[in-house]
Amino acid sequence: MPGYLRRVLPALVACLALGLICTGSLALAGGNHGDRDGRWGHHSHSRWHRGCDNGDHHARVSAWDEQWLMMSIQGDRFEIQGGQLAQQKGTTEKVRALGARLVKDHSESLATAIALAEKLGIEVPDSPSPSQQWELRAVAQFTGRQFDRWYADLEVQDHMQDITEAQDEVNDGCNHKIRHEAKDEIPVLQEHLRLAQDALASLG
Image 1 (cartoon, helix red, strand yellow):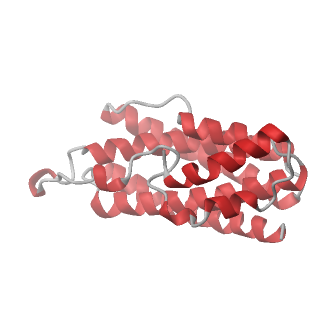
Image 2 (cartoon, rainbow, N blue to C red; image 1 turned 90 degrees about the vertical axis):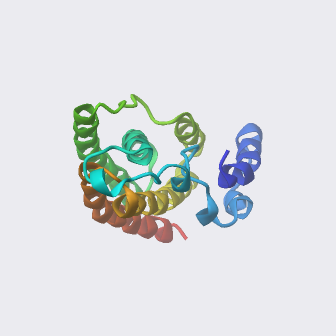
Image 3 (cartoon, rainbow, N blue to C red; image 1 turned 135 degrees about the vertical axis):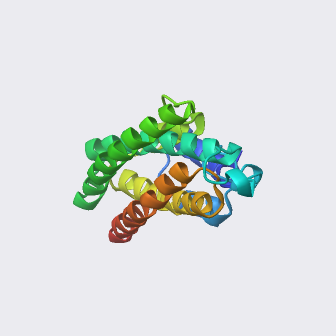
């Protein structure tokens, strides 16, 4: 389990089980989000990206290429479901608008990623990862401004990780088509990060 979840899980479970008002408590439990080893159970980049040979660097699909593309598809599905949840439960315009933007952009990204995976013979995940599904269920337990705050914070941390992983693929991936997909995603992810940060800041 990633370090972030190991620290946050006990606090979140306690909050949900006891119905407590826990605003701010998970941030303290989570500490520095930036030290997570991958995103919600995803493999860290260092385990997967090595092994490109100069002769076939552009054509072959490395283990990291395959893993990154599968993670991207899972991430798109996660963002779509989370964005739909934000449109349903969000209480502020910025959170609802963030959810709508994520649904739109990640639906487009998902279609592109699935087409590429099928062309390259890579498995297409049909749902978010189990840990991502847990995150969605956990965030859905909150209501009102608590939901807005935790959803926005989740999106900030998630997109920071997504940008790092996409940049790793651009720098170290083997297959030029998958690297191009990652490169195209980075500006979109950066804009999503900006919107999520703005939504979180507006909540105080």
